[in-house]
Image (tube, rainbow, N blue to C red):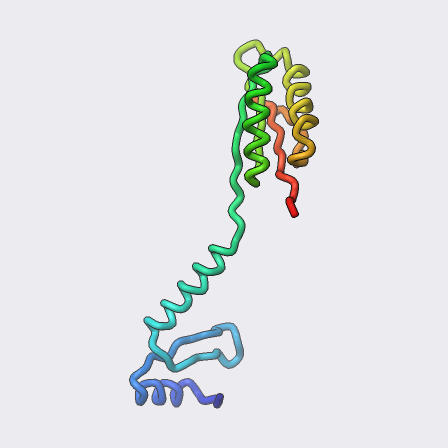
Length: 146
């Protein structure tokens, strides 16, 4: 590869019937390449698509409880949460307090901690139960499988 001044590089690109594409504008001097601009854009999009497909997509599934959730309902929702964690999705479990049921904050926290304990072999707690407004939220991430 040869180093040419911009004017000469433009002349060479024009002579070849190609476009002068700036590859690295921050370099000193800027790096340019004589090629078809459409081909350059196509290859760039192709590279970005490959990078995007290799990136991990984080799925967050939610499970909602009430402060006075029954044992049968709890088991049902726990099984769904277990399935979500096994599939590799993150879990957002929350207790929603309606009206005056906010006085049962301790029941909500006990419920979420019980869920965390029941699911500890499938996932780990990312964020302990935390009260935000009328919701007490807890996040769980799946355990890495080999």
